[in-house]
Image (cartoon, each protein chain N blue to C red):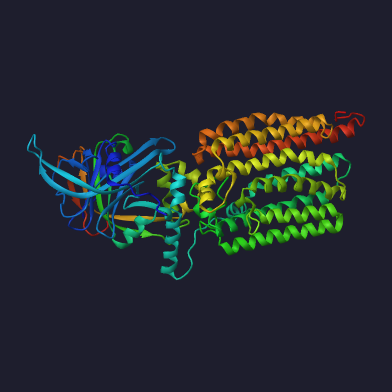
Length: 160
Length: 467
């Protein structure tokens, strides 16, 4: 079974922001900048219930993509990637279920720890769902240049 | 209420043009979105964006394609800031560049959306999104067949729903009234403790009742720029506590205040205390509750000034003196009354649009920014003048002039009002200074009376009053 190339996992680990694209009920792509959280197997993102439209879209259609395109968010790296995958919303416990990803999140955004300690100031922001994305297909541009065809890795329907 | 206002396609393209690259996205034949970074030439005038076809990928012409711009500024050790993004949707057509005859894709923009935190601050963006969160929890509850609600720990919830930190508005005048009575030679510890607790219950009742009536009348729902000092506790709006629970809590606080009031009346009662208690209850409940609704009629400042100035201070004083009244506590209550009213006055500035929408005709709703700032200066100056006149007339002891040390804080607030009049989050820092101003002025007046009491004990012959 194919695996995600190492440069791609490095990009996911480095990226402060990636673009999550979901499909709305009219079939239109809708893109949200979010922090990608890579646990070595799947890509996770979290969404506050305040901004939960994307969660509704995923519930309607689980096909999503995660792209890392901005050199500024990955410390100047020029390579780019888009990962297509199947998403699942995990919202059994919006109050604290997402906190298992906090170590990966806080490594990228240290300020979130102090914000969380003061959750009384913005309680609904910390009522969150997890978006679990199982990668299915990777398109990787080593030079970041779209005039060159991407390297494509099909991961199949098994978990990556 | 939409969390991010829809942008028209032209405005969306104008924003998109400012990004160094763009993310072209579409849904492929397998139903998955696919994104690729391109450098589009954006022309808001013709409502189009053109870009080179990405190699090895087929951009569809029979469905919507989007172009997205996204920006952050990394902040090591913190995360990032300067968040903004914009997406423009449209259909793509394929053609040839006239100059090079190479293929080019043209997106004809139809719609757009996005967020820029420099235009809509994150806290406002979040506040505008509260109805979406409530819908999400409603849907979860329906799906699971059991209520699913946002939560806060009991401590945080108690702190937020009662607005506990604002109790300084009560503690300052009550303790000052007790100290003045002590300087007059009467002090009873148990009565003092009961007075502080009872008066605190009155304010907690007021705080919670204020949220209940503002929610019922729509003022808090209409406010999308609350701050930690303004816009209510919002626990009802956030679904953390129900309206009924808050109404019960307000009732409980008033009942507890009433019980303590009756104990004080029974043990240290006087006609003065009865009158002050009844008037205080009417002012407290009538602050937002119909039919009085003082704050809805532009009388909020007067109600707060009277309630948290003379009523609290004189009430605490007469509990100690068993009904004996004097000019000194009344005059000492004037600066406290003015400064506490100014807390409300400044806090109403960012609330004025929501208040106006709900028919709450507060002073910042009624008057221009210039008039409001002038009003602040006049009221703050009057607070200091009251102390000086009180000392000159021999009503207040000379050490109360210590309160003049807070003038720089008042000047700081005054200077910050106009530049931040339309910026609730910039104004927040000055609201904080304004709260500290009231607290520090009260503490300095208290210190003045500690000096008076100390002087009486150490050197009974020393007169700290002029004349």
